[in-house]
Image 1: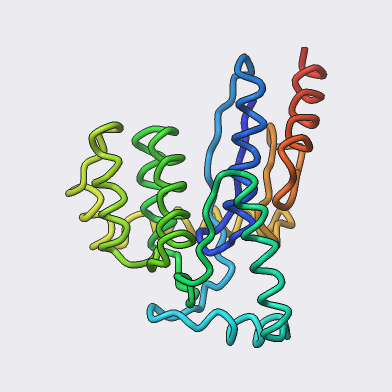
Image 2 (image 1 turned 180 degrees about the vertical axis):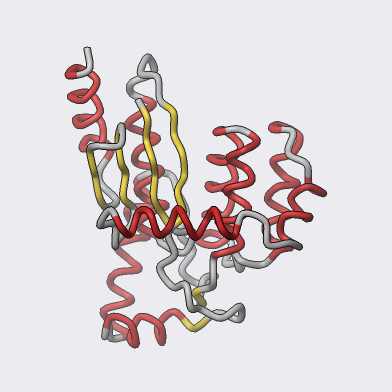
Length: 217
């Protein structure tokens, strides 16, 4: 079963969706899955210095400080249910994530596992530790931590970040999914045909995956 997980590092519902999907897949250990992480930028014009989250949400969605706080608490609770820590005190800004998507593209060329683990590491760096996921040092620290288990080459990652490698590929993938009508994330596309959107509960993912597996025989 092929799964394309279209998402952005700066999207909390994407972290929730991934952890939820992983729990669903853990309940189906015999289901062969090939997962690819596809790029989507919620804020492609965001500057490298980022922007205060409350200011950003007010400008983009018209959300008041109280509304934003309510959403953050709902996100924190969903994360806790799934074993993921959203530390709202640490995370005060939203950042540009284009270079993170370039590095994730590189990781995908190393192995699907490397791409998945780097994705999770960047989610943790941002949402749990409050770090800038677009900062090259933060990304290289993530690669370095994964290197012993996955054999990732830190110097190769550094060379990618210091160049424009994979920029065209990332933009092509982003344009492709937007042309397919993907305008919000997470968007989970199964076997290039079936779409699940949002940070669904594990049971929702499990039900759909079991049904599609049964239909495929």
